[in-house]
Structure formats: structure tokens, C-alpha cells
Length: 180
Image 1 (cartoon, rainbow, N blue to C red):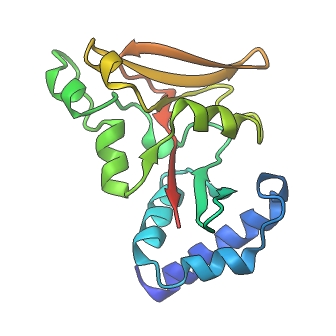
Image 2 (tube, rainbow, N blue to C red):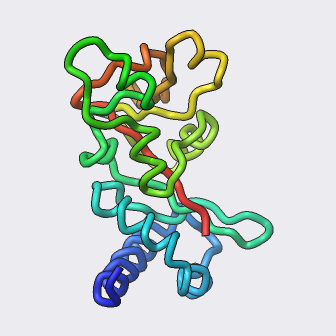
């Protein structure tokens, strides 16, 4: 990433951090910035998250001082929709196979799909996926049966459902996170 792109990304992240202080009470931007500086892998991942419409923001800090950035766009990131769950589902789809899958894209971006617990924690910070849905990490035993999990918010509640892993919809994408 060029210095100009990196600086623009950091300014965007800082502005979002300051606008949404309720997502990271007790945290200071200066501390987050120190973790970002020189972390080219994390900055590249955050750049991809931003470029695909994820609007990454800090949502947690571990006791060891690691910060978690998560996609905080109101709806599932627009640049990551119309994807099936993983490569296996994409390759084995008989008709109209999508060009990409959630797990393949996440891997290429250097991010992780949210777990069910992380998805529910994100929903405590605001109302997300009220018109879309997002694939989430799926237990291997469920995936072995051909299914995958996704979540959304409807009727003021957060729901986690299952679907066939090869399915894909214009309104279903995925959210990710990266730790720095």
C-alpha cells in the first residue's frame, strides 16, 4: 500500500473511531494507532475491508492489549455479497456457480468470519443486517452435512439460521474481523 493510501485509511479509521465511541468505551485512538503503525498486514486487511464496504471499526480490546477491528457497516458489506460459503460449495454447485465464496475471500483479505458469539456481540453495539444477512463461521460437523450458518436482525431480534453452503443471494455477504 502506498503511503498516501495508508494515510487516507488511517484518517478514515480515526474519524470512524471518534464518531462511534460507544463501540469502544475506554479506548484511545493514540493506543490503536500505535498498534497499527508498521503493521503492514493488518493495514492491508483493513484497506480491503474498507474497499469492499465493511466500514471497519474497533469493537474490542483484549487484556493483552490487542485490538479487534470488525466490519461495522449497517448492512453486510456490498463488495462481499452474492457469495456461497466456501470453495467446496462453490466448486460443487451444479448451476450458476458464483465466482467467489465467503471463506476464500476472507482468506485472501487476511480476515476471519465472525463466530456466532462475535456476531451476537456485534449486534449489541448497534443494529446490523436489518435488510441483509451475513455468513458466519460454521462448526465442522454442520458443514460436513452440507450446511452453513448465517445471521441477521429482524423484528428487533438477532437470528442465526442455517442454509445449504452452496446457496448464495444478492443480500447475503459476510462480515469479518482482524486483530492488531
